[in-house]
Image (cartoon, rainbow, N blue to C red; front, side, top):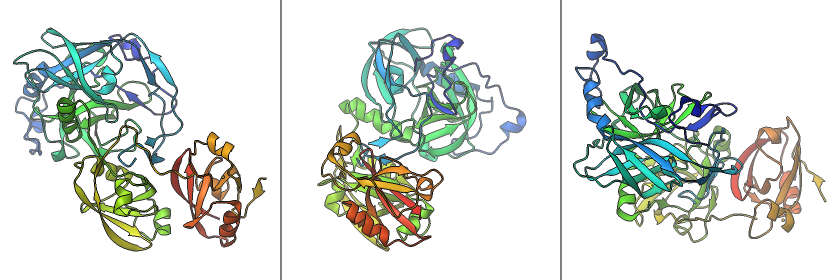
Length: 492
């Protein structure tokens, strides 16, 4: 999608069908953060300190000199990030080895200039911003609020978290102090500073609406601060600060049906962005921990199938051969309950924990395996540039599973479905509308690999496993979908 220019009309047509997650190229707009009433000044202190006696004017004066305008020129082939995106199907290519959100998006070329914001974090000119602000740029220009203009050099970028670092040559530059995002609480006041629509040094006020937002489909690694501080196109890369004027987030995206502010914005917390910044400055790349597994969320139906109380945990759907998890003894079908003693709520929680682990460190993982808890010790590996994860890979016939028809998987079909390696299993050819199979999530093209934990390598295996099923029984099905494994729970 085109980066907005200084013209408000530049965002016309940004909205996608439904509620679209939109990149917001953030500069601060004149959303007036006026002095609060005396009643507001008397509110109790938060973890970020008491509310300023003079409202938020002092905070704004401290922060705005260090929030810059970033303009770029060049051409880039990018995916359309404006359309709605689905939920996680797998994490292959992530620290476990890629996470996908529906079918691949068609790339398109973005030409001309773009605009966004950035935050100076060191007196000698290191600027933190979003990757999507500078992606594909041939030139980067950084303009300070005092109108000083610098040529920017891209130090490094991390598309997986949408963080980038730009360097300008300067001394004694204004900075924003790093804050501790882990101390944030829902309901605290925060200020967003940036250059929305090219309106430099715009400050808006809001609260922390939620913490730890994931499953958004915005970036591969997500741990967003959600805020209702007004954020608009041009604010991307700008600062989210607490009432002490400390940097606690980098404004990144908005959730909108109109293309503009609707009260739901997202910022990458400093707990994530600071280590990435330090790694980019030091090595030019980001080093993340790696397990080498595919994972998915556990829900109540799947929890019953795996003999897990509650619905917290992450199911291991695939294990990369000779990867860290494989060497530690993790198996497909294990449910990871805790990592280093910290309970795992879902797949995103595990992802965060692993990616932030030091490469070479040892971690204790508690899994549920066949109804029993088991502790395993894994040595964290380094996430490779192009991780590969273990992937399964063989006359139509009506089958006992209601609403489902399958056939042998042949080599040609496997190739069309993106399945590599050994050709085995049965492929779903049709799923009847309104059937239990459809409601369970089975789709044409799914390759069934297991039924109730029994391997399915052929039609014979499928028929044998299906014949053991009873009417009204809930069946656990392991499928390979577009090269990635997924557990589904179906009632027959």
